[in-house]
Image (cartoon, rainbow, N blue to C red; front, top):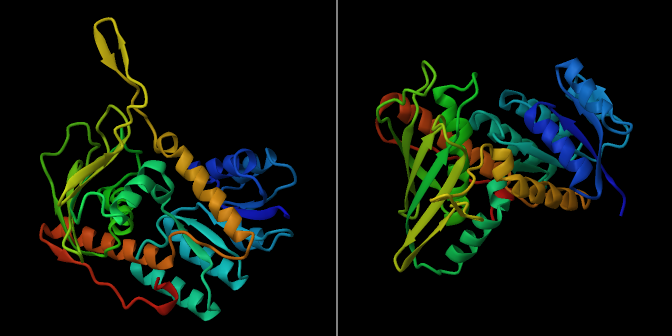
Length: 337
């Protein structure tokens, strides 16, 4: 099988991590071009690759010889333009979340795909590729704990970056729980409520952290998400499903517990790239295998659109303090399954 040539758009933390992954972990692919508006940074990343071309323009990177697929890891506001450029060339795309920052942009992406008559866009909701999440999905699909009633979710970061805003708690963090809930339950989110406890003294000035987000689903399940991005002690993602005849919890992270000196304990992961390293590897590996056949198989543009619509409702709920319903367009035939 020939090697898949990939253009990587965006060479910040996620883009550079994907470049490393493609070069060292994922077989059957190589980075042939990169693009980033920071010319010095993209050249530095390209310098570590054999024969990769560096550009500041995404269109130029996609037009480079040998490009068969596109991985987009640029900031969210730049996603729509890059995706549409890739679709013009009919190139398979793996786009880091969000697909677009707003549902209107996601609708335009779906319209462009619909004109092609086939799916080419996959959204990087990597939790679907995490081994624990996959096992929970299998359990729920098999009815192992009966009909689901609740999902209890925790999403904690040791600290937030300097640029992080209150809106980003919803659009960049809770959006993962939104997609995970939709996928685990095979239900849409229909309404959002956002509650704010006393603001943590560890939160930077102006950041409303932590928050409690309540999601209602089309099947009557209640999903509660504790989002706390300045907890101070580490990175934790946990999910407990409660059904009519049992419960199941993932994310405890107790692979090894040490007892010594009158104490017991274990390591707490400090970063999402460590906690979900295997999930990222599996996601990109499966995307490469599918893209080599000219197709994509993971979370699609509808999933990206639905997450954006829920995020939009979440932002409205966080500002108003009241329950806000989610508005979804009719699901196009291309994305029905």
